[in-house]
Length: 386
Image (tube, rainbow, N blue to C red):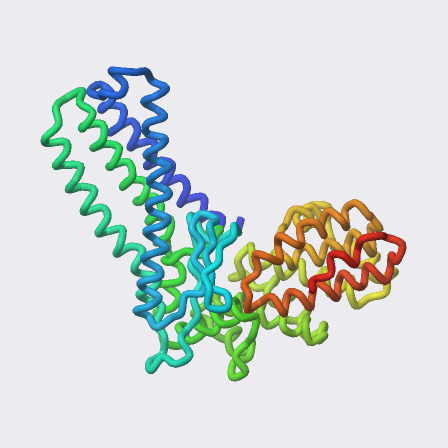
C-alpha cells in the first residue's frame, strides 16, 4: 500500500469518525427538542439534515473555488477554468462557456496559469491558503449565527432546528477543509500537499512550470525534465516529466518518451494516478511502434487482465487511445474498439482548449493505425477528430 493510500484512508477515517461523533454528540441529543421531529416523523427529520449536508457540500464547494479565484488573482495568476462539483466554467475566445467534466479534488478544482506580464514571479501561496482563510470567516459567521439563534430559541421551536441546520453546514465545511489541508498526496491533489512543496523559491518555479505544462501541453524551453528529476524536495518532477513524455510522443521520439515514463513508474514518490497514466503510455508506445507479432508478445507478457480492465474503464484521452490500439490491433474486437471510440467524443470535450492540439494529434494517429489495419470496419473514420 502506497503512502498516499494510507494518508487517504486516515483522512476518511477521521472525516467519517467526526461525522459519527457529531451525530451522536450533537444531533441525537437535539432530537429530544426538535420541532421537525416532534411535529412530523423520523423520516422527515433525517431528510431535514440530509438536505443540510447536501447544502453544506454545495455552499462549501463554491466557497473554496471562490477562495481559489481570489487567491490566484492576488498571487498573479490567470484563471483558466473553475470546476464546482462537475460544473466546469472556462473561457474560450473571450467568452465564458460551460460543460460537465471530472475534476481532481474533493468537491472542485480551479486551474490557473502564471501571468506572463507579472512584474514579480507568481506565488501560489495565496491560491493554496485562501480556502482555509475563507472557511475561517465562514465558521465565525456560522458559530455567531448558531449561538444567536440558540439563545433566542425555545425548546421544540423551529428556530432551534434552523440553528442546528446551519451548524451542520459548517461541520460539512470542516470536513472538506480537513481533507484539503492534509499535507500529503491523497487520491487527489490537496492544497496542503502542494503548499508543503512550494515552500522554497526553487519549488515554486517547478510548480509554475508544471501549471504551464498541464494547461498548455507545452514545456518551457528553458526547463528540461532532468532539472525536475534532480529536485529532491519536490514531487512535481513526476508530473512535469509525464507532460514532457506526452510532447515527445507527439514528436515521435518514442524511445525518449518511454525512458521518461519508466523512470516515473519506478519512482517511489510517483502518485498512483501518475503511475497508472505512465503505464498506459508505455503500453501505447509498445503497441504503436512494434510489429503486430512483437506487440502481441509484449501485450501477453506485460499487460495483466486487471490492467486491461483499468484501461477499459478509464475515460481519459490517454487511456482511450491506448485501448483502441489494444482492442483494434491485438484483440481485434470490433465491439470493444467502438465502445472506446464512443467515449472519445465526450473525453475530448473535457480537454482544456490549450491541450487539444496535442491530444488530437496523438488520438488521430492511434485511430489511423486501426483504420489501416481494418479498412472493412465501417465507421472508424467518423471518429477522427477534425
